[in-house]
Length: 272
Image 1 (cartoon, rainbow, N blue to C red):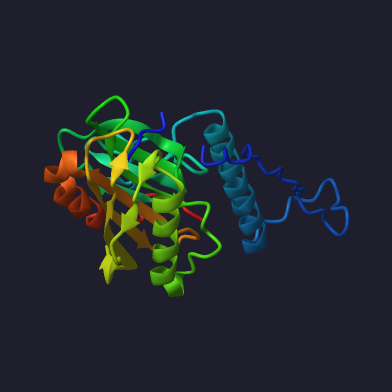
Image 2: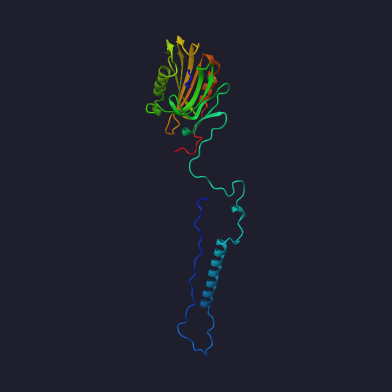
């Protein structure tokens, strides 16, 4: 094709105040009389007061950073993640080396191999797609093989998951007759071959066709093989994969289509 060039910090601990009094005798005892012996009830009250004071002191020591009872072995924090807190909110999906990625769909597509090289993205706006990632093989300054994955953009309204076949035909018609082939005469497209399939267990349609022409300003080639893949990953968007490989790059067409078919999804665990 022609190139377009912690966990929330706990609330501060508080020490409960203890409000207590020694019970008053019901009647004043004569000063000369001996004090009555301490009975069982009085002993319980004193014991309760002592226990309460012990609890209060223990809490105060804990607040002030003093030592406490030993931490059971089963609950001790160990390992490299000890003391770390989980990051809240979304994180960007990482695209590993050797892959192309469509972050908005959680999609990863393996790199089809040499001599494909970086062309656009990730996250670029490309023909028919946004959030796109693209590669190219440069045959001349104006003529390339093109490999792209992205989220279907312009045709989102007609690419209904239940009718991917129709969407694929309409998209390839627009691609062939409206976009990459400038300065052509005798432009034609073979009858599309449509294959309903699955990609990573998701419903998909693969369309393949050959575009031919009589003359083309940007290349001496006589044809281009075009593969278009639509997948419904169930994430509020349609995955679009394109491999447009002209006569000059014919040897690399099958590897490109194979890479598209090995796309996997749900790598972004923060998708809505």
